[in-house]
Picture 1 (spheres, one colour):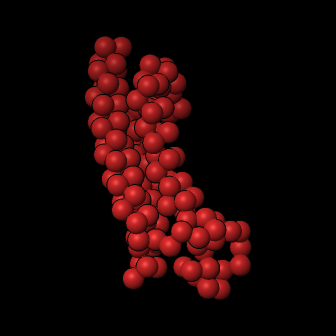
Picture 2 (picture 1 turned 90 degrees about the vertical axis):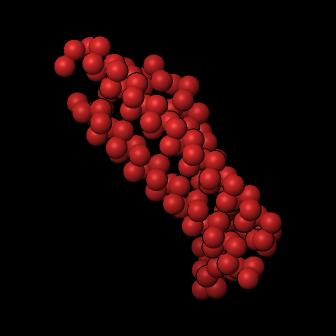
Length: 124
């Protein structure tokens, strides 16, 4: 594979990844904002979800918006750091690298949506 083919493949994968990550960021923010209208605003939302929980307190704000913030930061870094990411390789196969990044991003997206739905279900 020549350098031009490798560069073109990276550009295609990067564009595809940043587009889908942007969609995930938007959906996670919209869902969390929607859930914020229905969720009880308390200092510790965990006992409302699981009454037997006795761990660290977590406010409604951090419960709803922590993962969308992390996804937003990841999207900004991926979007603005394109040239840095082009030169940093952890694996030989860049398709595998983007695949791993996509799985991690999807897991964060899933957790953001799950928390928003959980907060909405408390109110009902």
